[in-house]
Length: 77
Image (cartoon, rainbow, N blue to C red; front, top):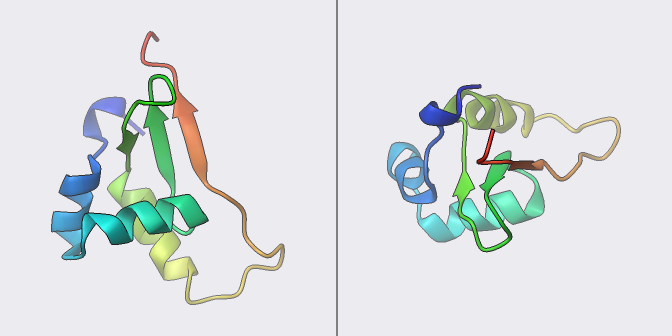
């Protein structure tokens, strides 16, 4: 994953043809993997390949019940 290739919430919503609210809801529930950029007030970013992979997997029931998939990126590195 290249930090420069991460999409904003709006960009991901446009690519998937859904609302930004749907993206936020999916990220909050852990159904859409996301990266938090910067401090708590920083924005979410998404790797399109990871999101598409998660969407394909969402049609399957995970053995462990799933997990929250939000990661924090340190923008200083």
